[in-house]
Image (cartoon, rainbow, N blue to C red; front, top):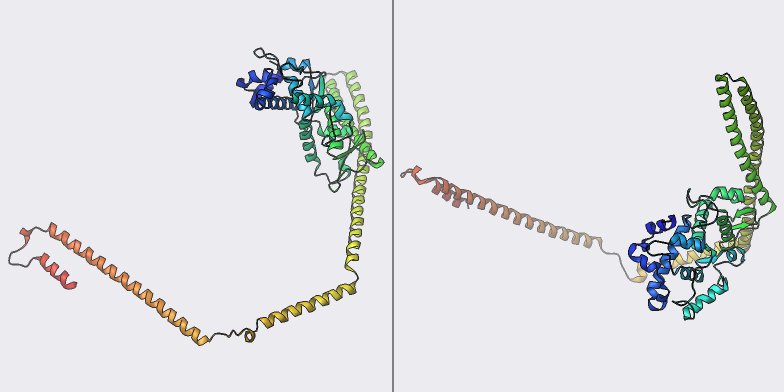
Length: 457
């Protein structure tokens, strides 16, 4: 089993064993007999191929596999072949449907056209569109139609959109204009593993990605060498200037020098180690050779380090000057805005007149409100405070009486409960005191207690 097929079977839910017979069959006739099943199979294959391409598992000539494009042909069919089900017989229909739906776009047309793929007037391969329409009418397709998988390479729109979104998320916080400028080399270095450390983008991926960001998303300006992301306050990126190209070249040169410095530092350390080992082995010739290599590397290292320090200083000044240009530009725009607003307001005398008129009108409103609230006009008089106090005392007395009545009722209930409890205790005594212990000539204690209880009641 190929790595591609193993990935699909383990990661795609639709490719469970019960569905493989349908997915590998020639299901084109279901377009008319079972449209839902036909669409389900189409979507399952399109999703599986896009995810496999994102993982870098689509077969391609050369060392690496593209992540944003799909190559179709005999190699793809061979990688998808199984012992039990053979090759997918309707894969050609899957690709044609994806092209018709603009999920897959022929790569060369994608790279060369000047119209955005989101524009309604963008049309891919004319034959793809025509053949799709004929299939819908039943003229071609179905069981007898020639829907074989042809050799080609297509841009995968979904994968491109996802990769572009991740790149824009990483650049959104770069406010400095200098930080938004890249050479192609630096752009590749910064975003080569945007999909993951084990999914590095290829040269074709970068070509597709830069075309998409510049033409379709309008997020960058790109002249073939220099890349510049638009600023947060721009609707579209400004054209690349000579200054932008110089900044990109300077950044590329700094990156190159940093790499050279690291290499020379490693060479110095290696030569020093070799010299020490030769001295320990009493090999004078090898020790002297290693020391000469070390000295030469140190000389070159000092030169590269000094040049790098100078270029980094220049870069810092350019970044500072660029930020100052942006600040001055914003200030100039702010001056224009303030001038326009002040022109609408007028001179100070006009403002003073408006304030006086506003105060007069507000005063009139207060006067009218005071007249409306006058008790003499409305016929409403203030209540007599003596009557208010008298009614308040009556309410207090009524509340006190209610409380006393409640307390008396609670006291009565408590007394009845105590009396009932005492009666029960006396009855219990009657049950436990035997009559033989009582003297006939003496009064019965129980009778005495009962009599006392009755008198108490």
